[in-house]
Amino acid sequence: MPELPEVETVRRGLVPAMEGRVIERAQVNRPDLRFPFPERMAGRLTGARVLGLRRRSKYILADLSTGETLLVHLGMSGRMLISGVTIGGFHHAHPLPAKHDHVVLDMEGGARVTFNDARRFGAMDLMETAEADDHWLLRDIGPEPLGNRFDEDYLVARLKGRSTPVKAALLDQRLVAGLGNIYVCEVLNRARIDPRRKAGQIAAARVAALVPIVRSVLGEAIEAGGSSLKDYRQADGELGYFQHAFRAYDRAGEACRNDSCTGTIRRIVQSGRSTFYCPACQR
Ligand SMILES: [Zn+2]
Picture (spheres, rainbow, N blue to C red):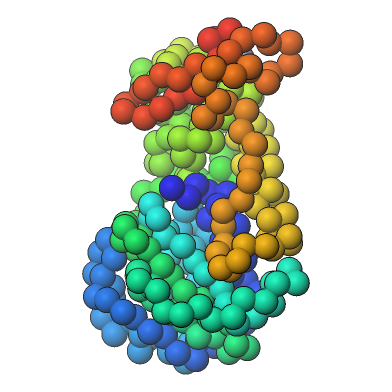
């Protein structure tokens, strides 16, 4: 499942193909993904110029010259493919239409953007740009982890008194946007905090220290995604998936990488999801 850094990498990969360009043709091949597509979606997209591509949490938002904004969510298995243009020295010819190609956008300049989603947990919607923040998928989402509203005072105040495990608290999208299982495991490992600890029982200074760690863990992953765009080799022009070395996630039985720790990463299950942590240094 794509997490925030992957979505940001997809957004950055789409910018050269889409930003400032007119959608010359929009092809919509089915009535819905996870939710029904908006009425007349192809007609409302055709002829619109993409003024800018933003990201909010794990949603990509394309502001259009028509006053509407296209929302894209990749869901579990959604993929964005770019063809017809040269990226990073590699030219991807238009692929033959494939099963699960649900939306195809032919852009001014020759790029084709294909949204393929085998499991159809993805979503697309159109809304008035001025009301984008109030869209039902966006309005309850907390501050962006890389934005100014997510700071030490905010996190300390929000975790105070909470009896949920700190891992569950950080996964709560109302607290902070876009943090998923993989990156929360990484953050808590670097912070040396036991993921099972009650959020409200962690000293304020240790909670405050989570903020710069969240920023650097995500920042490093976005940077790794950025390098994958520059060094663009994937044969099918797919955006957003890249090699990234995790310290904790998926490393059960391997040595903890924290300085001066000789512990071993362990896997446990919390709320039905895998948690990877080091019992030696995460307290
Ligand atoms: Zn350790």
